[in-house]
Length: 370
Ligand SMILES: [Zn+2]
Ligand SMILES: [Zn+2]
Image 1 (spheres, helix red, strand yellow):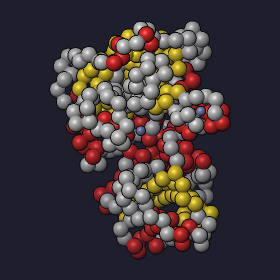
Image 2 (cartoon, rainbow, N blue to C red; image 1 turned 180 degrees about the vertical axis):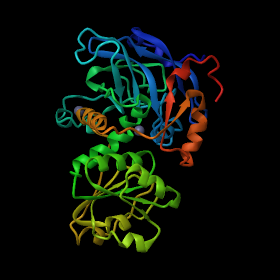
Image 3 (tube, rainbow, N blue to C red; image 1 turned 90 degrees about the vertical axis):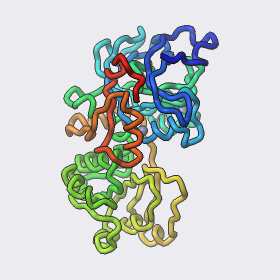
């Protein structure tokens, strides 16, 4: 057991309980067991025992300070599902024993134009991330789902459809909403051809969701080994993006393209697949700028856009949609003690298609071995 610094300081931390978590004290250090504080539930709070937590690439970026903004100790995890264990006396949406989920945000200003429109992810003050954001209650940084429990205002807690596999539901909270929101925003539906670029954690969810929305889905991948899998996931066609002949088949044909690739790639090759008024939205985030040729956009009045997760109401809508269409993530379950090894595999793209941590493993005796 490692004591957490900082959190015990200041009056703000008095009404808190120490819980077990898995995180890291430094960018180069492996994740290991540590203790963190969770505030005792306030009138609008829901306390959740975490059963499963998905592993998002952002977890790794943050744990290793690759975005240069990590505050340590860092406890990642924003694909959280669990069971309500207590509620504050003003909570109306949840009761003890309910299933509940938490995604990428745990709060926002709730007053700006975007919060009022249900676009909390774009809050003018900046939303409060589930981890590595200023914690308004404890005065420290927020800690994510690699832990035994979390306390969140009910306004940011989601209901979980009863019919879905609970572990495979966890990745919907980030990978699911990150793809659902742009597909919805750009009105993807029947009679449309939609391209999904990159078949990883995000891409495989985009295929399932776009298909359920009624679109024809074409997957673009650099890996011949992914062709069969893309079809199994529901793709109507799969194009090897390095094959110019295959790419030409869809020139000017697609209504919408969702680009989930975070490596450098030629964006013009995909813009040129859009029909008149078509849009391409980025959800992957390459490190370097992507050069866009003006004539990839001008002749067909095309749009080049981006999108970030989704609002709370929209996240609930996505979960309900997935419940109705029986959509979950393809997952590989791990114990928390395997997280460092899972990160190494994530870097190699060696997962189909999301790691999910069985948080019961945090209760295991010897949790320090990675
Ligand atoms: Zn994420
Ligand atoms: Zn706001």
